[in-house]
Length: 227
Image (cartoon, rainbow, N blue to C red; front, side):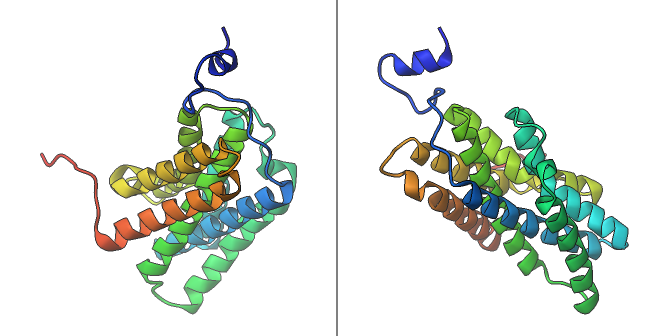
């Protein structure tokens, strides 16, 4: 028996595969996805500039950070070629954000960490909800919606940190991937309810953003072992 058949038999569970969620307006989805691309590209570029990368290095890091998560999302969903390669818009935004980041680093010596954290949190939240939305449109179970939303939000950042020679934030800052997961699961769950569906993306975005910023500025952490 298929997963969809199982979900339709007996009491439905939001954790099982369901019929695909109604598609978001393509223009709205593209606007959110491109905004996330620009924000992550700018944040990644500034981080690379602070690490001493030259112009090419800054643009390359910005490009990878901006597009990495979305490409992973689309490939895993079988939506190929990825949206980043189907039109020049996302590529142009990623490259432009890298150049802008390099210019900002030149204009303001010593960019403080606070604005970078805010930019990163905004990009994290935007990509978390676009990942959740797209996975829901493909009829994925809530487990997969949460996983793909988290991967979309953190994939570019993982590559960024590896290129900068750092432990990925998703592994070292505990309320990072957790924030993306919370926002993704909330958005995915609300997308399954016709009454809550109009508020799903906004709610998931706000939960992820607020949780990440509160954790950073409040010093919240999940338990960890000290050996």
